[in-house]
Image 1 (cartoon, helix red, strand yellow):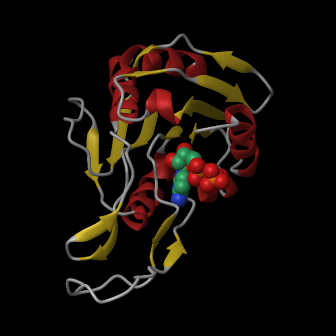
Image 2 (cartoon, protein in one colour; image 1 turned 90 degrees about the vertical axis):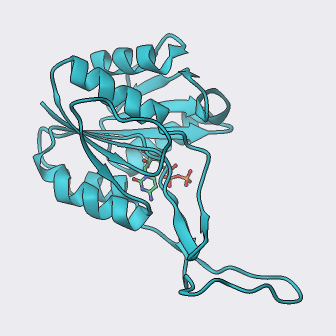
Length: 205
Ligand code: CTP
């Protein structure tokens, strides 16, 4: 199968030297890409800026911003049998990024932010039949309810729910998978490599 996987954070430009980002390491998405390659699938890995090497054999597309990630995903999603959005895409970006480095001024600074595209939400709206769409919910609280809301709102087949404290910047993770039809599967906690293998086994069989 052709599997499209996104991973890592995005960077949203404030000025030529500053940006807004998040703590995603990309490790979970990269582990899923490696597990999919082990199983003999074709992998397109669309990655935000991370400091880990991509698995050999993946077609890697490096992007920075949510806008660039959206373009890359839309360009490749049509031919994908499975799309797994593990990236921590920024929900907001500076509305008026500066071309020149900002200079400090007396007083407070207010930064106006605008929404980015909900990439997975768009894919869910235009889902072609037979395509599997998998999202991630990374939450600090109310994990199950938040995950189920995203599964429904974004028209997904599965959502992988994890706590920020278990997932971010760690080499291990603890994921519960929720299926659209109501199934709930708690994967054993373990290395991201093992969790990724188990996750693919569940969603692809
Ligand atoms: N996602 C995306 N595009 C965005 C933001 C998130 O495709 N601009 C994807 C992530 O890759 C992840 C899932 O959507 O798979 C997580 O969505 P999130 O933004 O956390 O969900 P929301 O429904 O926006 O919920 P909230 O912001 O209220 O937590």
